[in-house]
Image (cartoon, rainbow over all chains, first blue to last red; front, side, top):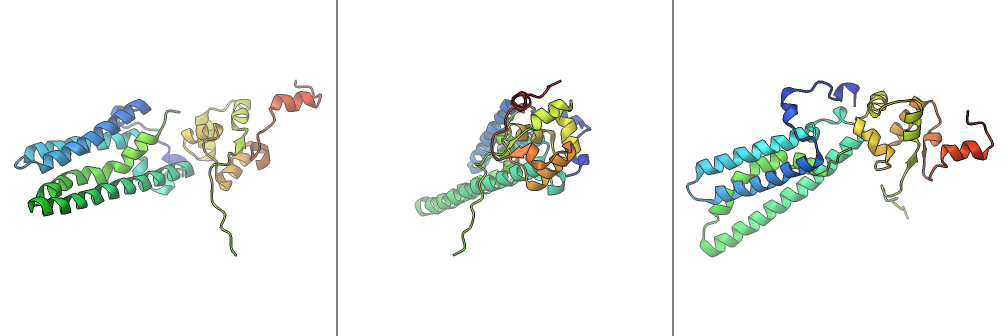
Length: 150
Length: 92
């Protein structure tokens, strides 16, 4: 890590980033709810605008979670110190486990739905809608959830 | 048989960072900039919530111009005041 990596200049959008742990956690909870909303809206037939709105809301909350940790989940090693690198790597491990679990459950759900109704489409649509924000911002959400006030 | 030592973070590493920083009138940000870490990492180190790598421990010790064992220990440090007064030294 070089001293240049310590953010000195505050960019305009960073003023809106959650600063306190309690606020960060609220954002993460809202992000989780919005992921659920994406899946629910995606599973609904003929609701493209609702799905799009849910995806945009989830992406917005994901960006808020990312900003709240100074984008630490997406920075390379040389811009983080050793503690932050370990924190980031732990967050990626937890994210991988979470996302893998969700996908395994979804695949099992698709199999069961196909056997019951002959159409696994709704689960596939739900997965399609929830995947972009889930994959893009889960590491940031995990880090935002774990980071405490110092 | 080769025995693999399990890496553990449960063993606390004690340090005198807070005392040394206070003695020199440094803020956490000052120290962080000097040893090239994020300022929150200094807080984590001081509270014993994060054990530094050997490289970082040496960097910190070098910054304070002390041997590494004067800054970090696997056993709790004796308070500085006890060290000074028990030896009958003049704290002034």
